[in-house]
Length: 456
Image (cartoon, rainbow, N blue to C red; front, side):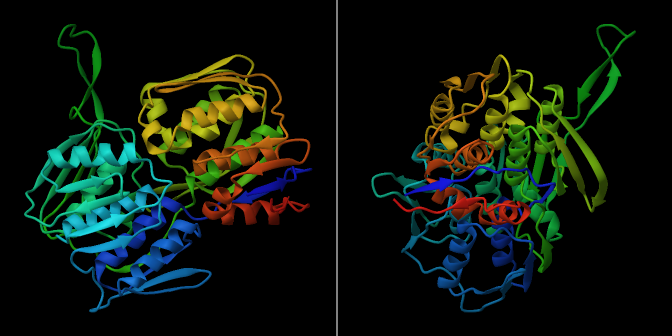
């Protein structure tokens, strides 16, 4: 299905960011595990969230939802039948959390997943889990994850991945069972499930490894930075760890924030984004764009618990090309589509490397981004571990898509809004299904109707 997208004639003065998708998914899982009454506010209204609620309701969990909150109640009748075939239509994040829950609860079942899930990513997760004694099997032909009940031993391992899904699965195994789990991340990935644990006042141990200045053993006249450990974050889930109930307010969404920054940059205007969560990933994006000549100013900064919240004033300019690699690239891996579209306006070559695992998160995302940029008149090439973009031109096309990756679809939708003429957008259902609140925010903040719908 295609839709005709009208560009924004004028950039609104300010935007407000909706609730975070990943944190909403994590909070629902923890609320289900809690067994106590839980209330989730400022939640994401994406399709996956509603599908997940429906899924748990079918298993007997009592859940109510209105425009402002989700309530999940304790239910003695709730549970999962043995040897069941569970139909699951959500994305890879809730799928991996569900697999971890089934293993932790020692339930024999098969989780049937949808066509949008990249099977290479499932293979990678299950292969690593198998080396830890977790009995998962991938029925690729039947598009199912087979969970086999069995004994579990305490888990202690190093995790070296730029994507958080394996870590999340292992954490959920520990949270759903009576075993302890200790994970040590060599690469710090998005800590959405860790944030949810803190929000629920769970006693889980989460330690960021710090560095300190010490005397250089080679040259005592100098000092060198020494880390407390070889890894960068340690997560400890205790045996039979209880998840308390209570109220959890979801923080603003990172994808939506990155998309709005992209829109402002591509329109070369100035606008304010209200109530932004300044997590490590977003701060990395801001630092990158500031170094590229785009002005992003923080205003009304404040702390809400352990979270830094601020308004952002973004002044869009033509950026300078950059090379993004190593930990810097890994820290913003899930926002690569938005970074790529912004840097496509730079005069010169931008190189993004060291994020090969992003290709397993979704189906051929580098090819999808580079192909989309080529259609916009930007020379681009997909690498095994990233992208090369020869920027400098105005982004111009009469057709976008199709898309398999929802973040890619959102990034190119921002380009369509920033354009000069109506464009046909194939695959817009991905944007509407996952970012409905963001679309409403843009429509309400704009003086003009943002889009009209034409079915083909």
